Length: 364
Image 1 (cartoon, rainbow, N blue to C red):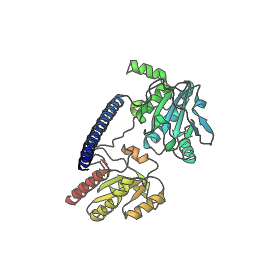
Image 2: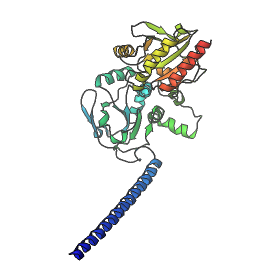
Image 3: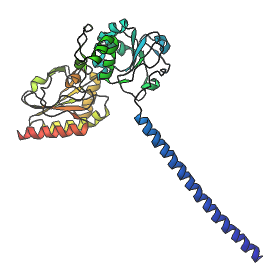
Image 4: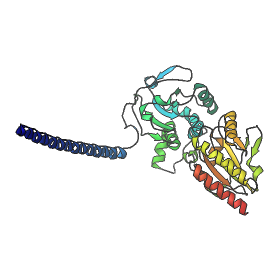
């Protein structure tokens, strides 16, 4: 009996040892598999990073079907027979809004070159209809919800564009940003210009009606620099009273561009309100330039305790003059009406500039 028990104990010990060995070996194999997968993923990521953005030339653009401003469904196949400049678009984007008049002026040239401009636009039909009419755009505008954007436009901003040939294939590299989209549009509207310009940078030619040179069409995106006279303005405040920058001449001004839909702007606003209360009597004034609905801006100002002027710009009009479309950003303007420091972008940078301006004003 004792012998049998001993044999059983020995067998159990051997089995436990064997189980632990197999378990450890399995973990090692799993770890090796994981390392191999990571290595492959890293290699794939490096290859993808090296690839250019956008679909390769000759690729068939994925089919889509979206409603136009009248509610009629329009498919990609309905646009075939002409080359198509297909632009991901949003009139609330400052860069889109800035190049819209230029694209409208180029539409006559597109027709002559058998090119169709089509905008895949975000927003509702009424706002897009009003904006298109304001800028004179007559091209098809198809309404796209964010989750329904064609795959090549996913994770892309606005404006970005593909040129498609008559059969719906990619005919030019992805144009990303206002400058590239506008350059591609101008080349399509007048290909002779592009050809002569490629061969001779000094070549002269007749321009399309109202067309500006590309160098003049480029959109500043980094803000006006220190030493630049601050563009003047006269804008309505939340009560409808006109406020002008000229009224503040002789005092330092922190001009803040904000948006009621901007999360970082909400984080910044109460801190600006506190700074204003601390420094209201020492020569530093605050002006907040908002966008959108007056009631929404009024509610935000009350929520955050803002007591300094809040003025409303139309779309991105004043932002364009100051050369930057993001929010929140701020410019410190000196007593002489000249920008004293380069644009401050984001909450921390704006607060640092505000404290700098307050200290300078107090010292003065």
